[in-house]
Image (cartoon, rainbow, N blue to C red; front, side, top):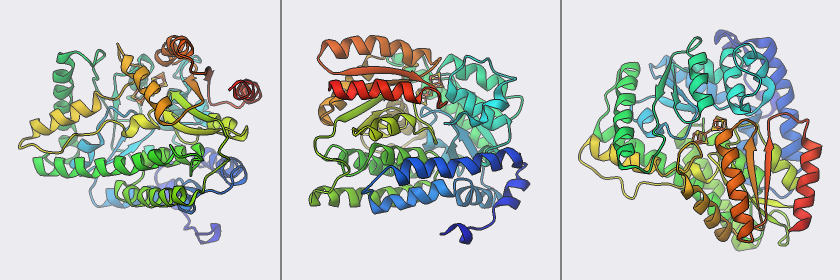
Length: 430
Ligand code: BJ8
């Protein structure tokens, strides 16, 4: 669809109460940034990635319109901010889940009066989008689901509750203890009760199983993309793989299964044909740390602009999204299925939990499987959980002979030249 063929979405945005002046400013910048980073800076991209280019070009268009239509038909839209809130339950109850993490400092101005200056960029961005009425996805939500992962988020939900209906799910802090599983299942049941009230639908073994199968299929297709990235040269850039993952948070799961599947087919064919992005000698980088919500493409761009290729991300916009899986979707009761869900979700290794040694094991496994030359430990400023783990992980990885660099940054572009210098030196050292 060309620019002139695009439907006029402005009446929809106005109807949603979007701050049009700010929204226009945002949409006047984003396409240029995207063009610079994705279209102009990359060569030999897979053809199927055109779908994602389109999605970003129409970021507040077709998908928002789909949500609007679904709402007109009585469906509810549920906004989430963390992988620990199971999409399976949301979709089983006939609602639509959309990930709302913010990846740009554009919305910070709206959060400045309600949040301290020294808070993680992801929280500031997400809260700014919510209360500044800039994001149509927020405007579409009937309820937001927060969670008690990091302290910043916990307190941010209190702020957000003045503007939007929000329900907070309590995630256990010591997830490896046996009682954590029990506690998480109790919390899942409370979430179900809340969402049943909101949607007017009842959770059944059948609808939960169907949703588990659907969301699993989506994760399985994403896993294929990552499998393909193990090839040398990788058939897709880190930037394009990141984009695929970022869009998966808010797109329709059925369409994702289809489109990610098509992309995976193409990547597998490219590997057979010996087609890749970059050359075989390019340094292979693993990024590990805090999630990169759309449009946070900064780190990948710096690394790939300097001739290396990001081959995997140990992040929630990377392997943590799809790594853990149900062994088999079977059970005769909701309880049986919730046990499967709890086990799958408690297997996500986020720094908000203690102990979290399994994350280090994941990093080492990825280094081996993806033949990684160097690890970038990526932390958003003021994210204490990931920052503290980065200090320990850097020491351990270095001791084991794995080259590593620790980067703490935010969404601004002020440190780009400084980061570029550090990455260039790191790549040279590899
Ligand atoms: S499962 S990583 S999505 S909590 S970067 S807001 S932790 S101060 S996003 Fe996360 Fe769930 Fe964990 Fe993943 Fe806080 Fe850190 Fe900010 Fe973070």
